[in-house]
Image 1 (tube, rainbow, N blue to C red):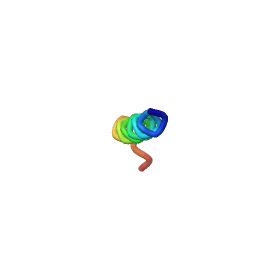
Image 2: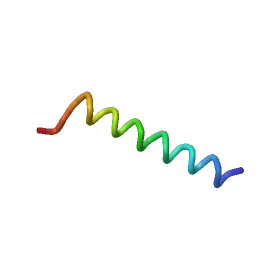
Image 3: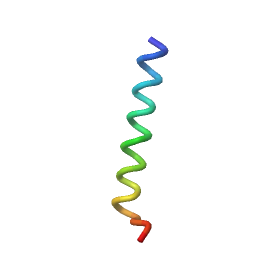
Length: 27
């Protein structure tokens, strides 16, 4: 369960980062 939870959190964070960079591009 813990490993599963951790993986879900990592995927969620990755998605959030991708969305953030799409909304606020660095360049």
